[in-house]
Amino acid sequence: MTLKMNKVDSFPEITRAGRQSEDLQAIITALHESANTGQKFSLFVEPGNPYNSMQQRIRAQAKKFGYKIIIRYDSAKKELFFKANRGGNALVSVSEVPTVKAKNTTTVKSK
Image 1 (spheres, rainbow, N blue to C red):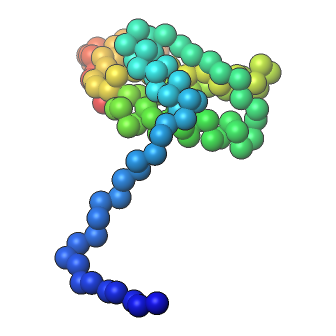
Image 2 (image 1 turned 180 degrees about the vertical axis):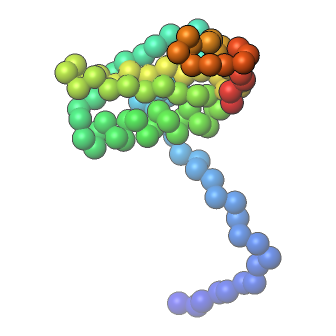
C-alpha cells in the first residue's frame, strides 16, 4: 500500500447532502403553513428523549427559515403544540395602569 499525500490551500465546505426524512418534511410543510396562515399544529410525542428531540427538530427548522416559534407541551394528552410566525417587528400596545403613574402611553416595537 502506498501513501499519497498532497498539500492543499483550504478545506472543503461542510455540507449535509442527505435526504430528508418524511417526519422532517412534514415538520417543514407544517411550519410553512403555520407561518403563512397562522394555523397551529400538534403531534403525539412521548415525554423524555423523543419529546426533546422533536422539539429541537422543530426549533432548528424554524430557525433555518427565519420563523419565530411557539412550542407548548400538554403532558396529559402527550401532545406537542407549535405555531410559527414570520420574523420581524411586532407592535405591542402599552396602556396606562391606574395604580402606576405614567406620563405617556406609547406603542413599542419589539424585535
